[in-house]
Length: 603
Image 1: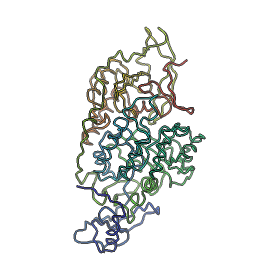
Image 2: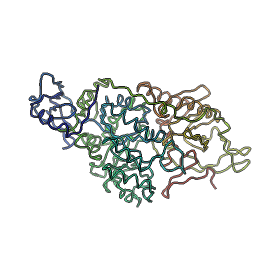
Image 3: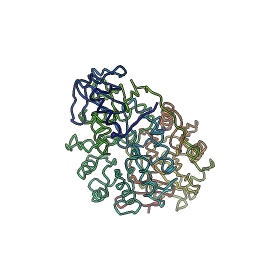
Image 4: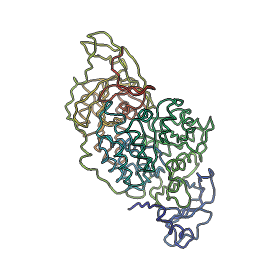
């Protein structure tokens, strides 16, 4: 089956003829309750006529469009709403291919989104982006890609990645088509504020191409540098964790993206900008950022986020606006997506019951019924990634426990050390200074002390780089380890554990798999292979979701009962999020003063 989305100007003659009734509709939806996200109301007794991939007519009566070959759907008792849009999402974080992601989210009512493929770009560069774009174009999704802005997220001084992209590469992506819509989250916000040539150049190329710039600003809401950041043309930001973050961004003309990922629970606080401070919602958006396949299966996608926002006191129609028309307007696409109006793509969902329940029963994408009652109604074409993407871990499975030793500056006693402190359900970490024991010149952790080792092994260029640090609140209560090649954003091999022996075993397991996740205890090994760039599985959605769940169960059995623990742990190498992180170059701290490498041992 071919899913065609042509530019509006090519469809105008047929759309007008169909709206008159001279051409008959391919699909008609009759007598539903329209969730009109443009006017902010629910309008009863509305019918919709579709010709090809676009909506030709919306009104009380579309009988003049019905012909012998028209498919007619009776929507009596149901709501008609625009398909949900994810305004900021990394598909790679689901561990699914684009095709399997589409299979997972279309039945849930997501018909499109704005996807930043900076995970695969950090491993495979432009080729990885190109492959994901090609695959996305084969799906029914209204899929818009963003050119990754930060590959690497900071610079080679702080981490080693598989590729490096600059202004020239960003400019090239915009020649691939209008569905490369924006510059992805500009994580190196200090670079923008202080005039880094690479970052400024990428923004200039984006604006020159008529595209949009997405942000990632983690300094405080009232920091004087937020307006500086906005002055560069950054008009959207998902790093909002408080109501004040939302308010200050909206006041500066930015779109504030409120995130509810698997492990990032920010909507409950950020939505208070509207529910308590009455800020206008036109520039407020709901997004997922990162959701695992397991949480897609167990909780949902944008339907879950909209439902959650409603539970926080947002009116249902307003919540739908935040996941449809607001998102479309942010990217200048309101003539194509985001509302059930004439001329737009026929990306439509039908909902049963109470609107607040967001119970999607039918999904229509580009004029075709693609899902009904929670199941796909069409087969999607397959896509095969080339061998170079399937063999991207350039390490030998020969890591030894001795490589995880931490030499201390004293022979015995105690020494002060910096510890990465994990915060459940948040992307940020704390920096703790803790006294750790030393024996025979090496750090010797107390198994009951609540501190684990964390190590990073560079896996892209065979540099031999590695660093070992300390992390708390992982909650292992017995000898255990987890290793993963999903380690945002550089995606080197990260290993966390309470046993050096098991840490080495876990690392060698994921290297042998050419990428993935492995949890090792004295009882055995749980593996989750991710062959595509060490990030995504080649398996179907259902298999991937179960393998993801098996990792969660293995972690929980070892005491690590953090909510969606794997996703939280996978961000401990993301060196642009406060406060303390680790890369193959060592410990990295981000503070109001900027980003810096800091020693493990504190004075």
